[in-house]
Amino acid sequence: MTLFSRQIVEQIPSLRRYAHALTGGNSENADDLVQDTLERAYAKWSLFRMGYELRPWLFSIMHNVFVNEVRLMRNRVPICPIDEAAAMGTPAPQENHVQAREVLAAVGRLAPEFREVLVLVSVEEFSYADTAKILSIPLGTVMSRLFRARTQLRTLTGEPVLSDTRSGLRLVQ
Amino acid sequence: MTKFQAPISDDELMAFIDGALTPERQRRIEQLARHDDELANTIAVLLAQRNALRDSVDAVLYEPIPQRLLQAEAPSRHSLQRVAAAMAWVAVGITVGSLTSWQYLSRDESARTELASVRHGTDLPRFVHQATVAHAVFAPEVRHPVELGTAELEALNAWLSGRLGRNMKAPDLVRLGFSLVGGRLLPAETNKPAAQFMYENRQGQRLTVYLRGMAKPTPETAFRYAGEEGVSTFYWVEKNWGYALSGDLSRPQLLEAARSIYDQLST
Image 1 (cartoon, each protein chain N blue to C red):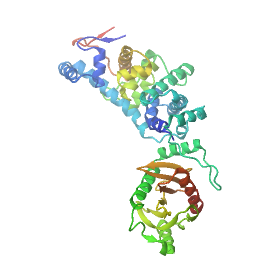
Image 2 (image 1 turned 180 degrees about the vertical axis):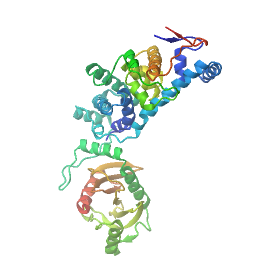
Image 3 (image 1 turned 45 degrees about the horizontal axis):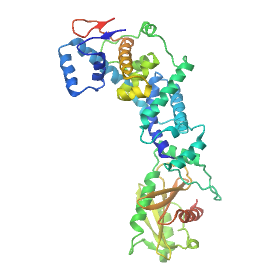
Image 4 (image 1 turned 90 degrees about the vertical axis):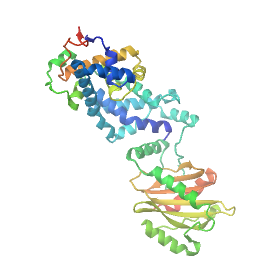
């Protein structure tokens, strides 16, 4: 086995975790995503340069695979518009504690591009700059998607959204 | 779309949640939150959300990797292998296909086996290391290179067979110019001691053969080459027995000896 494939294998667990979050916990779809990613990575490895970081490179490949799959098979990953999702009425927990499974299901209902940013940053702990590179989007877009993803996730998990204006922090429409 | 306004921007709030702010700015926001229930609540909710998301998927990290992912291959792997060879980052084992009674493994299969060993956490790397170290320690030994010499060959064979739990005889490498010096028992894994046989040629060059049962089920391999700490080793696994041949010889010479040992020790 080459050093290259050994390094790829080391990344499989975290690729699976990312795929798992992207597909809202559907492990079959998640592993399909990982498999497609690995096949592409092996096919493209001549383009990989030593010195370049392997991890962001693999995640950028998964991003491309994911975008294609979302485009081709929208119904495989259940996506519904945010308003409709909110109307489905997840019971609202009163505590700040949010159930893990519930959050994962809610993440699955975010728009795919929000999901990606949210998970790359929150779970995989990529820097904002690396996230921008992986997704080929400007840094500002990373920030705005991240903010919107988190705000929507809050709605979806039934957390009250900011409505108070007594502080400097307030919501404006 | 909703927007937070001053005193802290959306971006800053996100960076606070992700721990991406400078320590000063981080502290400033913590101070603000102390006097601002709404901000404090928002931070608490977002942090809880972040943690819950991690908790919901972290278990995946510890799941066994599905076999199909370990076998993922590029459609054009043959051209890739050429690239790999040219790039010299290949550590692909040398595959011997011409052996009679050899269970031939293609290079792909060998890579796959190694992938599987990564996946199952076999003790193959540990085995190779132990064999290499045993060679490095005993091969230069002048007075006590072995515990039992050829004068007690039958006792040696019986002793090591008994301790390793298999019938075996020290392989004969006379045809290759190496005569047996003797052998010894070595500690390796619990209930899996190792045997080492030592050989010497007229120039005083020494070879050692090291074998033991693998501590974990280990897929069979083709001959593989490893160079560690200046010691050249060919090793292979057959029926969950690990074999290693170490010595300061050229690769073709070592390989020829490995073939002979394989034929003699194969169970």
